[in-house]
Image 1: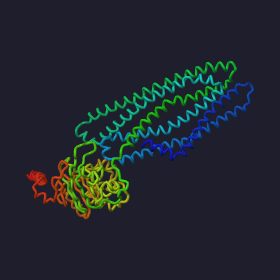
Image 2: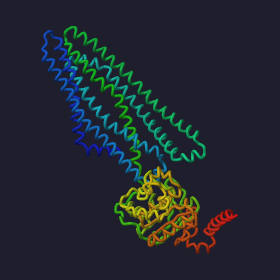
Image 3: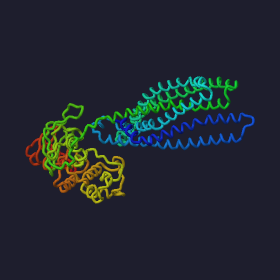
Image 4: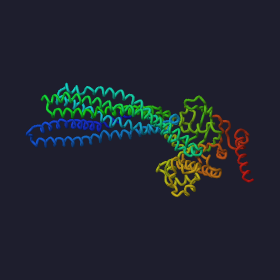
Length: 584
């Protein structure tokens, strides 16, 4: 798919590419005129009674060649190199767009540093291939063809072929070395991804690292990765270092052969000194493209290796797909789950087993259970983060698989366990950078999530920058800002996935009171470990090992004296003990 994106881009910009190639060919042709003009000038100077005007004319020609080369080079670079930059931008946008479509399952199998390497290093390598490398290749081929033709005219084809004997050997060396470069560059990219991942992981977990005094151990781990990176780069350098001397030796042989044969021809009067100078000028011009074969092949090999890596990503299946005739209505009706059994992809373990429940529109449902009971999995399926078996989850009597993903997810306001905040202002984090929300709506959402007073204590109020992942604020403040983000959206269905775990009981009670008033006639699903968070729910579901053990209102479940009752007694007994200890 990555290759298809490139082909489509090139086809879309074919006119600008064509103009760029035309001016590139013109540049190459103009450059090859210089040795001939220089040779003519030498022949004029060699005569005893030369005409000064002839010298001036040749100098004028040289200036025209220089100016023409400048203009045409400027034009083709503005088309070819600019297109390469646009391609880089386009490819990066497509990659990021593809990232957004991939399911959590994909990210569970990939490291963040590796994905960053795809978006930066690999795309840059592709840009270098389809920009400078191709331009240098075309320019070099044209210069070589014209130069070889001019060399046969300046002396003869025999001397030309004799001088070019080492060139095929150079090309052969380059091709073989290029294969090695490709393999070693892939290793470099993989090591870069590992280092990126390690640095990011270390920075994100710096507080834990310091708390457990693991700085030295982390440095050792990084040094090991860094040495591996240095080794792979040195392997690249070693193979590259082999190229330059090999090329120099081959071209030295060319010039020696030319000097012996061509010099004798000048002395015998078979050719003029100007022809000999022109011939050497053309041979020198050929040197540039031939010498650059190594770096061009290296760039091509790197680009192809990176393109193959990108193809792996672009060809990754978008597991969560929409039906062709999907429903674009908001999911705002009753939610019915029928005989739902679910296992994560690649696993045979059933995370949810035979789940049956009905959530009427406008009701508040509490889901409680120990860690690993399947609470978050149920939420992921409601949001279609994973594929749901057909007919197992219905919203407004429509199969959840028949909804357009955007419409379905836009109907939900979701506050996950791991609150993610951006390195931006509190206001932008609540609005999620959407300008459709007014300041009054942001303030109201902050008040309902009990974060307003804390925000007003900050020097910059709602304009306060909270740092990457909200590093400058507390866990409870992060949760309340995340709740504000969901409330400002005023969704049809609100899901709080253990979103009150970091707030105190007084704040929790006030938030739940606000939600009850605010969410009348709208559905709310509250997932929690603490019974206090779900005690006022219209129905409480008790999950354990993926199965529903009990369901009912608080009073009904207490009357049963089952698992819910035991959890309640356990939690409130602990609180009583804490208060008792404080009183004593």
